[in-house]
Image (cartoon, rainbow, N blue to C red; front, top):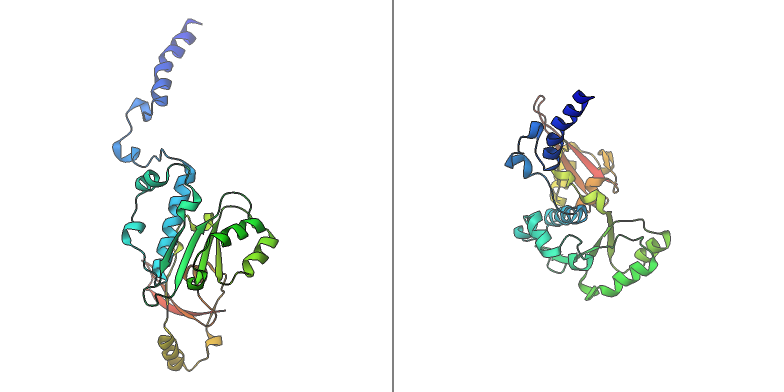
Length: 241
């Protein structure tokens, strides 16, 4: 019995050190490792990641997005929006670089289920609808079928993304091949070079994640470059359907 009590006494300080954030055998965590420990809320982190992906997505579509917005740190984001960001304050718009008449609005919906009244409320917030070419709506919950019908009645195009689909920019994933959208001229030259019609190219569905990222339309052609450290890189083309 005495031996058991001595063992408990010896172990107790080690348990305390573990609770104080020390590492293996009571050694302090290194500064490098500690820097990866996020002490903030998961909610704010999700908003931060999704917002950054949307900004990168708009930039890749040719919209004007300040680098300072994309490069905003998580710490600075939390300093601005807090640990529980107000979705109304996350709303922003961007203008196309080549066509200033094209304006895209981005709205983050609240975590609750999206119903018809939610869509009506969002529509009521939008000013200067005549200059709006599209809306990106980021959801965190299910959207009802009636709400979807209300979306379809809006006078501008609406793209719906779940926030979980925006936590990572898929175009930056190491395993994802590089995609580049061809211009109309490049598409014409490609089809002429190989003496083919666009429907003879491999297909890329409009609901594909890449097609949605670039907001591709039917008939557009994408150049896909596969790179590998072992095998040589190769190129293929896919047409959106």
